[in-house]
Length: 475
Image (cartoon, rainbow, N blue to C red; front, side, top):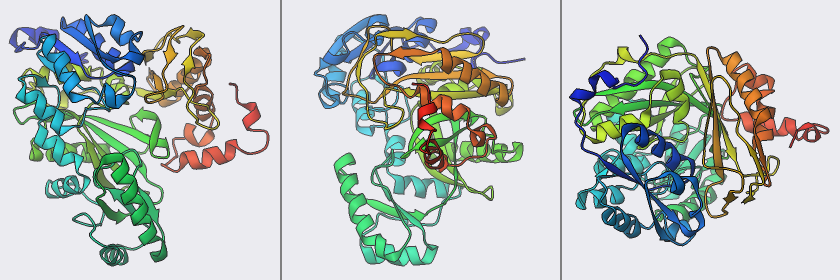
């Protein structure tokens, strides 16, 4: 029997239903994604939007909408007082933060709690713990996860960093304690590079996160980036929904994800999933979350960080497990317990997601503007999460992600062919997008063989830049 949802409709009589209206503190495709599930659950939705997003799809399809400020994120989607005011005037029961913006703000979660509005996510204390990378390393080490050798506290001096680097061996990597997305991060291969790298990383971290604390750990040269999707209730029960391979990324920004990972054996999958679940239970985690690991060439894995929210790439997990993670987030927020065990989760086939960004496929420069022509792909096993439409103006103020194209098939080989077919018929004109880049990746022999690491894009872009290669890309 396949579970189309981890809380079957047959159990509906036993569910506690407390949430009747949700404010979505986000925009774009993830806001639409949350709205679709809320409609299925009979939950009313409130969209908040900036002046630049007044014509967005999430505003059109929500039951209510509130303008919360000017175009920039700081004046709208990151403005906590405006978001809370919108929640109070529309009398919502809960706020879903999506990803990005306020999704991992412990302070915002505390404000929601103080205003008697349910924050759909983990407790503020857990968000704060996992948001500090040094504290997260310490907590996960105590919970039994393998940790890369490195500093136990934020670095206090260059001399301390040098001592640790000599102990663990070069190369090392400097990371921002409050960081993410590659900011405040520097790879160091020699002692002479250490001091300048520390100063640069700290300055960058201060500018990006208002926190200049940095730490050091051993650097793995050719890792896979593997993440485990977890789901936990507020009663101490946790399961995992398998892994995603997120190794194809540029400058630490993910471009493509797939599930399951071509690199994992059944034994390794079971071990990583079990340890992730045990760690979540130890720290008292609830809601959906993701534990990210680095997997080295010898098959050893190490905790990297935990994201205390839904991930951009969550659809590939939904496709192979036939679940709705947003629905489960809402049910957990209502206080419902998980009634099933890990053995109830089944994995079916293979799924791939391509992030379609409004960017030049060669230079990666942002390409905001008016979409003059648009065609969405369809057919068996194709899903498109997007807020784009013909005549939509892609604003220059936010992340360049405009769509996520997801496919599902029984095998990885068929999934690749299906993705290629979907990309070929997807039309977005008037702006530049990364569709040609993804088509080129689908044809790459290394990707098709499943033999890649986080260094894939560096080598891929070098091959693409060879004479005659760029001209062959269809834009």
